[in-house]
Image (cartoon, rainbow, N blue to C red; front, side, top):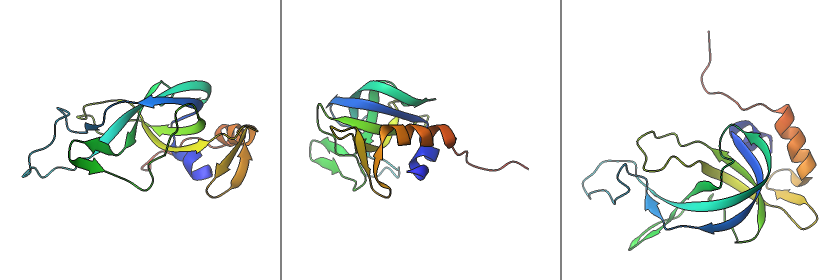
Length: 150
């Protein structure tokens, strides 16, 4: 849990409301030419209804993105993309868009843990934790910064 907490600049408890049409990450949002030598992928816009904001420097708005999606005959899939169900509530970990030329500036959802009816979260490494435990971790662990100063 500490790795995600130290990376995510936006952490919230939110309900998944649905997703939009998949898009290319190109500046125009269009499919790149076959000969283009670009790092391109497909993303899907998603809508989250924030309930509790635990960290708010970015990523606590309703509009977010997840990696992957399908546009026509093109499909991008990623093993680590959160699988979201409409109406379910999640602990959402988000980061800002890093590519300033991207078609969308909505934050990326790095990970989303399902909130069980009893209020617990099943984490991949720490097992079952409560929202209170997550909140304490957010308070105790600041966002890590890249680079170093001399």
